[in-house]
Amino acid sequence: MKLFRSEKAKDIFVRNTSLILSVLGIAIGVILATRFNENIPRVITPGIPYLSLQEMVDKLDKEHTQLKQSLVAVNDKINVLENETKKRQSGLSGEVDANEKLKIDSGIGEMSGEGIVILLDDSEQRKPASDSIAHASDMRDLVDYLWQNSAKAISIKGSGGMDERVGPSTSIDCIVNTVLINGTKTVPPFQVKAIGNRERLISAINDRVALKQIYDRVDKEGLKFYVVDGVTKIEIPKFTGNIITEHVKVKGNNS
Image (tube, rainbow, N blue to C red):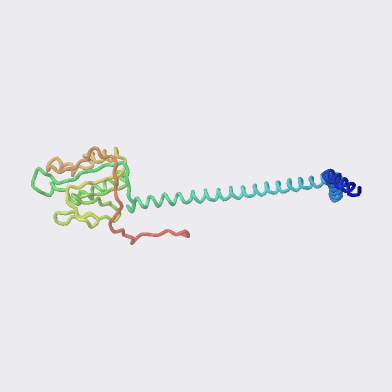
């Protein structure tokens, strides 16, 4: 009988184990929840969170205002610097123009533009004589004449040679049967190139009154002198002769 009761109790315990564990789990959960809720701080005064948020909003507004003021100050400084830069650039542009003009006048830079090519050559009709050949003096006079008619750059090229840029110190001299240009020996036919207003230069070269002496030789001795047709764009190299600096003055910032 005792064994029966013991076995029966054991059987009841085994069957109700899940129920017992569920009850214990619920009890433990209730205890833990109660303890957890006791640790959560409670809002005693509802106005405190609102005041904290308002302070944060005011702080952000103040910082935003300060940033806007700083941005305005920076923009003002940028405008001042831009105006100063424009003034300096305006002053420099005049110096740049002066330097470019100096480069053109001295011939130290290459140049290209509209213009003409003039051929000057000895006569083929008669035996060589003083009036039937091209002289160094002819080219000196022609260069001066072209300058007077607003030529911006001039060069002279002999047969088989290179273009010699005519600069302020260029010498054109005759040595026996050759012409010396910038120290380079040249022989006819000569090509004289000039950059400038093409119509004005052509009109000047075709002026038989202004160039009476040379046109008289063209008519009487067969000297060749004319503007080459079809050449409109002229390229003139930089000056390769000696630059005389004896009378050059350098203008400083304090002068």
